[in-house]
Amino acid sequence: MILKYVYSDGLESKNLRTRFLTTDDIAPWIKFFEDTEGTKYLHVGAGLPPAERAAEWINFSMKRYAEKSFGVQALIEKETGAFVGLCGLITQDLNGVQEVEIGYHLLKEHRGKGYATEAAQMFRDYAFENNITDSVISIINPENEASKSVARRNGMQLSASNVPFRNHTYNVFRITRNEWEIQRGPAIL
Image (cartoon, rainbow, N blue to C red; front, side, top):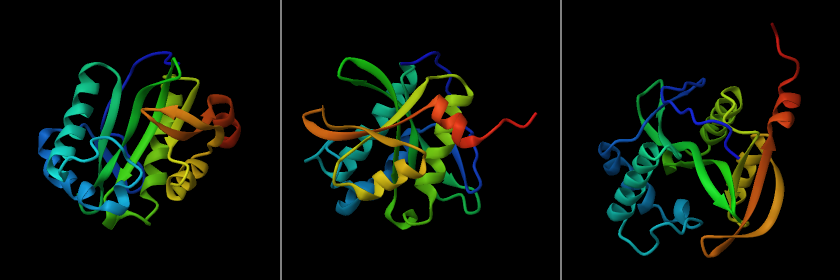
């Protein structure tokens, strides 16, 4: 459940910074959809050519911003300025309940560097520090071991299996604000 809507870009972690997507991001995002390994668990736009899928994805994310339903943001490597992928908060209707999901997708050449975990943790912290919600989720294909590992490193636990969502079945990983506060330890004043 969303407690309040606040969303900004310009977030920074050790290696990454974020910015809202623009249509200029369609071209670099085409590479993501040309990588069948990276997209085998995604069903959004399946069957479309990579350029159309990328355009659909970026335009839908920008529509989410306008509708105040969050949306993924561009991840930029601070050291090089390279476009790494996308991560962000996404409003999802899951079995009639409005949830806040952390979604993450990286270009092939940036996987294995810890960036997905770093970005997911950045958005988890943003959601809780800004009182956006009392829990965040990640909706993950049961066969996607890499994404499940990122969710676990983000402090999430499996909260539901075989959940119907968009004509497929997924696992839902979740962390609550209380669990996040316990994992962080006592606040330093």
